[in-house]
Image 1: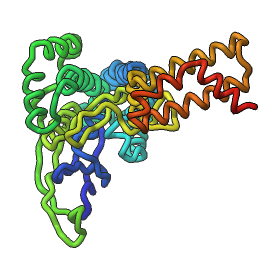
Image 2: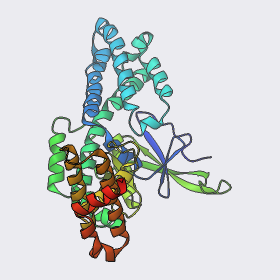
Image 3: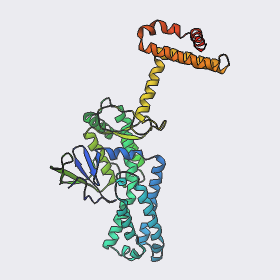
Image 4: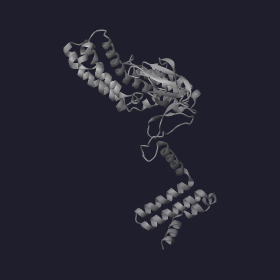
Length: 371
């Protein structure tokens, strides 16, 4: 069978297949650490919305179980709508955005059907247990995401970003130092002070695993052993994915261009991602960053410094009416030619460039060309 098949993922459990530095979820392949890096990209506003969406049902489903018949009948339709809304919010984020939403929607239709109210309220019934498991599982997800984001962003900002090398050894030392630091746990405790028991971050994820057999991703004629890993807590899944990625030399990094987190999979010290640059959608952040860096270097280059000074003066003279538009255009063209010649010819840059870039010389030569 192919990797990632027959996993039976839902809100109450996350199941992934691990093979080498790859993670397989719902028959889709991801580099180790991809999910942990991707979840860090939720905006603060979206995170608040998600937490609010998860908080509302926690006050409603106990009423359906323990309230009067009248209260339960009134609240159940409201709870169903809140659950559908929460489900749609959760589906925006990994790993759930890679799942089939229809399966969970059908489950909601069955569990929250008005005609099922009597079964929901039957003490210790199998239906009631399934209803409670679903409610508890889905309402814990927003807090799991909140706690992991706080831990992941702290780790990236205060430790990963400072590394001189990006490999397993340096990542392991950074993880040890971060997750042993008082500052890290003080920040996490402050965040968890009012909901300490709901999906707290842990360095030691709880999981169970077994082995399954699958076709090799490299050669379909070969079979390989694949570790299938089960998580009952979403926080544990994210932590495991982060650590598994670090083990293989993968780590999250925040793009200095767009601010989004992306996964690095080599030893290079990253600054920019390959996403579309918000400053100019014609370029990726990496391309835009390289262009910006080149411009900054050019500003310090003596050839460019003189060129920028002269061309600024030429434009200023034109704005003040001292020279015509035709002379401005010709003078700027000449200055560009002198600049390019100086960049290509070191002897000219050291001797003739400064002389040719005198304003009197540029204007004189430009006037000759216009005659």
